[in-house]
Length: 187
Image 1 (cartoon, rainbow, N blue to C red):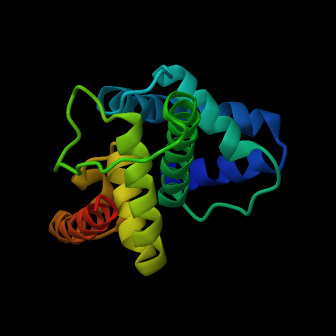
Image 2: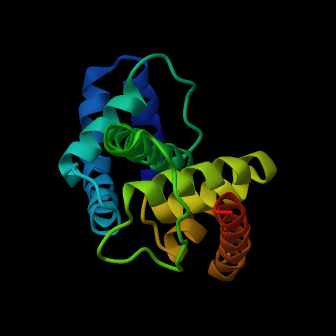
């Protein structure tokens, strides 16, 4: 059994209530999730520490009855989605307190700046991403993995089992769609 299959089995066992498997799965994935969360901390302006983001993500992933995981890629796709949901929920909460929840137009650069994306940017990207998901779920997943999980093109290609060039091409397509949607929303 390879490491990916072992992790998948541990995660599935943990979701079924096996506390020992849960502890072992956490040990194996904690470092990777912490690196993802640290990258998010650098890219997005939010108040959660990487540790808090990892813990909240873990709780979302393992709470309640969930379908079994297929593989490592499936787990990291779910982790990216959980982190996105946490950041979006926090941004919505803060925006509603600050400005009554009004959204503003946001830019979508090739990479998010080290200064961080504003809450308005996160919400605008989330809305555009929802539109992209209705049109092309795979491109939406790619964007989630890139923006909200901070995965590199190489990591995404590895998880998807495709070339890095294919991932970059898909990224450009997703980015163009998101920019178009965000531009239309800003009018």
